[in-house]
Image (cartoon, rainbow, N blue to C red; front, side):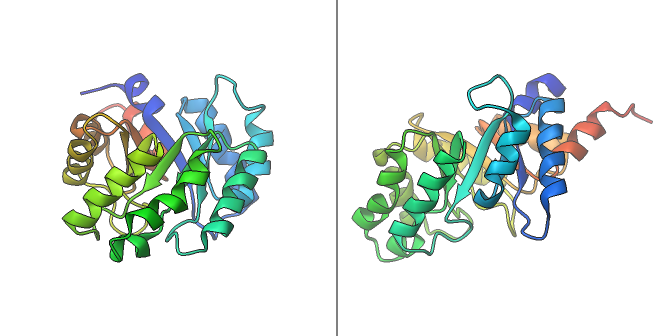
Length: 223
């Protein structure tokens, strides 16, 4: 069993519930610093607030992560690009991008790449949000290869809404990536045992809105 210092630096503390307000954003930033999480993942509208709370970018604290085109990626590429540029200007240090799933459905790898490439060219680490649970094996392989071709640094199991990440999904992405990109498991991490299982399956990052509860459970003595 891994202990807290091994697990906390792998966690992106996610706040993507649109029904939460500024106080929750500020609390998430404070929690991320307190526990030493890898990052705070928020919607782009909260970037200025979170950036101010976390302090200047490039520091030793949690990275500020913004989702782009979230959660479905079903917006024109020009708008997605504009959101990514705005996020970078607002202090985001990493981008979790929902790609053009319709391009996958059409088997159009060029359109899929053209949606992501200008965002990758901004120079920030990009995680591509792949809806592994819904993609056919052919579409998933196409998405992985195209994402890696344009320079994505990480492949994400999904948006975290609905079904959470499973060990099998992480293993599948890890196998397809073949060491060319890391894997982020998003959602559904409810216990320390589950988190460790995802890491052992190949996840380099865990995205969860339950990070604090997970850390607190670890610190409680066993009955």
